[in-house]
Image (spheres, rainbow, N blue to C red):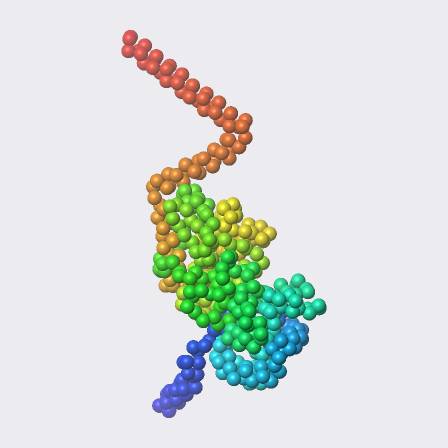
Length: 426
């Protein structure tokens, strides 16, 4: 018995001694999407046409794109006036750091990893160059000449599991003469601008973070220079847009970043949001990355707030009418469904919520007696306009009925008065 206990203790000590040093996790930034998020919509996290990095490399359906990557490598090498050996040497020198960027212990050997990272990273850089400079595209470019392929590649560039380290992309781009006129941040912005807020610069100003990969870049571009929200563990919800409007709150389109919501003097200013085919993909992957890597859950908080404000199609109609929301999906129901399913299992009750102060202010405004009276009057006015004043004839009928009711009441009162007066005389 004693020997068995001792053997167990030795085994545990051996396992602890074999753990990698803690500093190896300092660079970790590219993660597998947690299974609980993937179950909600696996397609939003899965590449369609190409694999970037090691996580989806073995999927046979993505192998045809390997030839396209090699076709992109040839003009890149001509552009930098260097050979494959020089680029390979550069990647090899960073191999340890590259491995530390990935959540998993990569099974690829040294040569296989260097080859994969070089081909994939050069493809991304060349893709961005061709997007910014159409004149650098070949006449039969297999991506930009086919819309379905271009859309599929764009989808795959937004995925957390489909990334290579940003410092490798920058290092390779800096080998080209184009670096003197356009930064890689600018190229990245031009490629992703359809899912980024406007107008903004092309660099994540004031975020005080190092960009780790392209999903991190897209997230960083959504953040305001100096976040103004007050985090708290309270006030997770507010009323939906229709109920807030009935309480007298008006909505306006703001001019700030995606996260800038301002409530002042009864008006809630919200950032402009375009809901299109990419919205779910880039929001889900930013949220997944945030859950795995960042302490401050800005995008997760945004999803929770939008879920509070949007519950039914009439909420969406209000935001569209104010120029806040632009719906490029097929229906308002599709938008509501997308927003309502975005944030599930992203924040525990003990987590801090970026918009707690905003929600508290909206809820206090909604509970005020004067505003509740205004809300009741608003609802009655809507009912009257809808049911009784929808056209001139129905309005005239209502007025006539009201006059008749008043006259009848006066006549009844006079009759009662005469009856009482006659009884008093007797």
